[in-house]
Length: 471
Image (cartoon, rainbow, N blue to C red; front, side, top):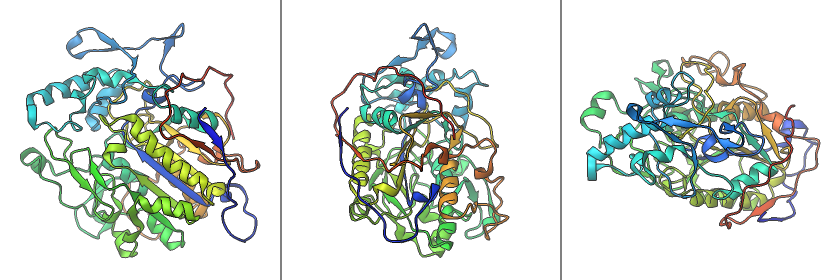
């Protein structure tokens, strides 16, 4: 299925044999945008997908004001609108576990954006984009995203990966690198940080000056790079330069905001963390071109985060095939490089983008979890063709990194040497699964499978016998 085999490089240098999780010397987290699990893998064989009756989709979501319902449907369009995805929208979408508010919230946004007229910024008003509000009920399969389905078929698909918080992109990216989202009232003072799963302009500014960019944040609490630096573990945060689609106020009238490696932004929070500046590691935030260079040279850092620009992010209304091509190019480059045999690539989407999903998210604390998003593991040690049903979130990435490189040290204010008032240690949640179970470290490293970044659309794979998953 569009794959050709290639020999893996030996990777690494001389040293004692590595065992178990420590065979992974490079963790790469590729974070895309705004897709729910059901919108990408809701019909994938063996996954916890869209409810059916006698093999047919059985979900019909109510319209606003009780005017009938609209069925979940296959959407062949590569460009799709989406719905609002602030904390209030998450609560309305979940609707006390009924999972029936997605269409209503998209219709509300559609009406609001229609009133704004030409002032509306299209990506921020994605509910009025391609397909209108109904687009939030559309799903894709191997006909639109064959490479993602191919990765699921040959590596590991995570069907209970939840956004770490019930909010939008900025707090999701903060959780990804720090296990928390907060607002700090005094620069440089972790004790002044308070829990905040919105992280936006102050309400007074948002209501009176919605088109004014937020002042640069100062993130004073502790992020994962603090521990990586203390343990001499290399890291990089790779940024595709361009623009970001979301408004800083999540309002429907804003201008596109630029995105650069050295400038803090919605998807690029690390330059605003005090720890990054104090450790003189702001230079570790680089353009994505450096990732390709490092992968080809066998010089990947131990930990990499990779974020897109809006055109290749899969954020509505940007086309899904453009994002898939970008991600495939990164995976191909790593697979062709010397570090492939010791690398784990995790792919996820930062929030649900207002799109339908049928699984109520579990509550681990006041911040989340949020709704389900797609998750994939690609690695020479990944179990082949397995669907992982463990409950996961981006906290699981931090846990895996800590177990692999930091001897299990957690971002815990009681033990990490830099106290902050975070409400809990997410990596220690009894609800959270363990990504290490997705690997078989006893197997020989699997050879890379190079995919065409621009594949011809193919039919979905035929159903196959469901394989059990477990440690």
